[in-house]
Image (cartoon, rainbow, N blue to C red; front, side, top):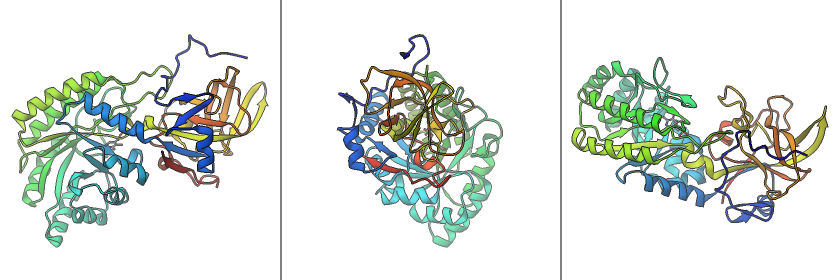
Length: 414
Ligand SMILES: *Cc1c(COP(=O)(O)O)cnc(C)c1O
């Protein structure tokens, strides 16, 4: 029928996974065999070698003194967190539930930081007892931490999460600038710092997180410079020297047609400059960046099996055994304004030349359950394996698994 059109914007090539014959190779195994090994579809598979390679790539591109944290909300599977914990310099958690996973993984509590609006009193208490760094996001948190510190005879380790007066331009998701539920507005931070000093909490630094899913190195560098400058101004009001300056992250990965991978080189140069400045301005501080999807997103695929193949009014539909219940983001319902296709392939027909235009839909009784809209792919039959690339972040844990009562997805690390 049709062949891929060279004039339309295409997805970035998914070269992180090799192909042998017709099969994608995942964790060193042909996908058809891996699916037998797992014993069920749908499943997510995360490739250890790719996780390791991504961290190595960052270490090469960024100055050695930059501390690399994994924001585990991107992929909280315990085996992934355990593996990542051995590769990065720290884990960022956003709930007591995530804190437990990070501690169970063997992460040193000194290398764990806890952010998030609406931290409940028991969560704060657990965090103080664990000895992790708490990114405070309100005056209330400071007062509660003061009481807990007294009761436990253990000063809470705190950093201030700042809501800056700028944003990360061109982000998939803005998380700063203007009125936000995250952090404390920069202009109120001096007062908060005074309160932290009065309450004798152990002040350790600042946390600024300007946005997410950004593919423009220039915008990321700009936000890093502004974050650094703001932290230096605020540090004058701090009750103790800054030991950690968390400059956030925001590094994106290419999901949609026309998107290109992020260029790390300019970010490496910028962070080297800031490291240099920090040795002068904030001599006790380590610079930290915290990344979620950039570390794990490209190392994972979602695998689902074709159940049915049918034509409706001239369009081909493949119905597969999982959809938005397991992978909300690929269906376009996790914060996207306009639905676009993730990179999709037929994992056991990678070299088939027989293409057709298809819609791939999940088994849910809702028109929102679309995994591919009119994509040109090798012709697939019931039993074939549809895969979605770029699925290592915000997959299983970010999807409404109970919606419509289909089986839960399984996750493996290979
Ligand atoms: C979500 C989040 C991250 C991770 O964002 P990614 O886009 O996955 O890199 C990091 N830090 C904070 C504070 C977050 O809320």
